[in-house]
Length: 275
Ligand code: GLN
Image (cartoon, rainbow, N blue to C red; front, side, top):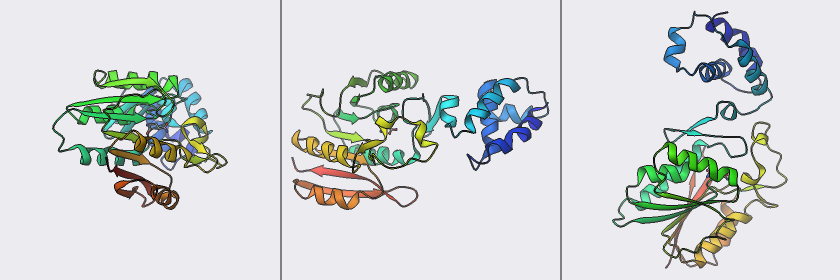
């Protein structure tokens, strides 16, 4: 069977789990063949020799299993990252955190010291290390598997000298006093929220933030303030702007602003504390 015929044959099997079923079959084929789109289309009428392997992958994908876990790849901010089951898959809206950090740090002359809480696959720290010349980053996570993967991503992008990966629950193992900015996309979903099928394959310790959902965010705000760190940038849930605005009243902030994601949902904030 040719590549073209194989795509046709399997497309229907994925139409309930994605709105781009044919494209996803091609992605799985390119993964198996270790080829890119151009190659695939030039060879569209050639025989496809990995039908058995493809069948297995399509079957798994048809259960809503994320394609990123099948191919061990995801793109973020224009770069390719390694992803693995057990660690959160990068989301496009998290790119906004990077933009916000760059905006704040663009005029800084000296070395910038950044702490990332909950680094997961390392996407945020690796991107900041790629985009900021003079930077030192401490990236923490409670998940050893995530730290290992994040390190692999740092090595892949040649920024391992700029990032120290450390096992820590929030600020627990962080005693540095020179941090300029903390950045985090922490777990912020309420524990009893029923996840969509595809998200349910991702680790719950990367998703659930407590019975309300914003508990870890509040904890991070409190400790960032106590440690005299000037900036805090976080992602949050679409319904957390009001409770967090209220929570922030007790702190001495210079400013706090909320931002929306590409779909116009409230998605995060930047706080500048008065030092
Ligand atoms: N920092 C990683 C990301 O934004 C992991 C976040 C998490 O696991 N909650 O994708």
